[in-house]
Amino acid sequence: MQRRFALCGVSLLSVLLLAVAVRAEEMKTPYFSMELPAGWTVMQKSVAEGKTKVAVRHNEGNTVVAIAVAALPRTASLDELFPPFSKQLEANGITLGEAKTSGNTRMADFSKAGKRGSLYVTTSGKHFSAITILGESDEPGKKLMRENFKPVDAKLFPASY
Image (cartoon, rainbow, N blue to C red; front, top):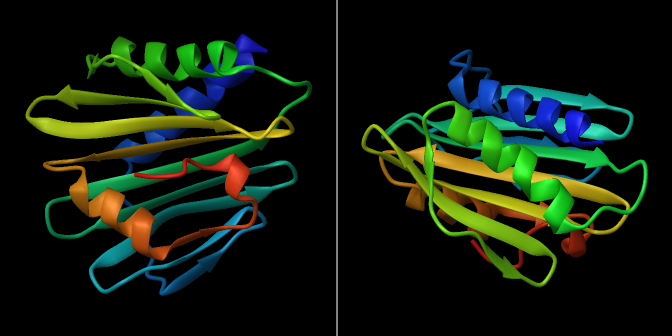
């Protein structure tokens, strides 16, 4: 199971590093919808049975928001889900701050080469989500999530950004 989470972490990190842009205004997936304001473009959108990966980029400041959602083969705790993502970030030279848990979400801020970011891992019991926000400042990504992100199941995503 940890291997599956590690593979999702690798995928999520690779999404952060991609630079292929596809223009979109509204995005809908089985797990959430998102209105993209001017200046935001879709880098990746992949929807398959049981999992979804989306990455969007703000053209000013190069802030990237990557969202991965996957079905769990069994119930897993945040103690099982969070470490593969944090280890993958650390393996890529990213310094993670102290992880904090609030409800069904574990979150940590991170930094690398003058860029700031946030990692959120949330579980609803049947699915988990991992959201990574990275940029010169992570505030544009947090604002996008607060104002434009609409979850289908609120328990699957952080309560605040």
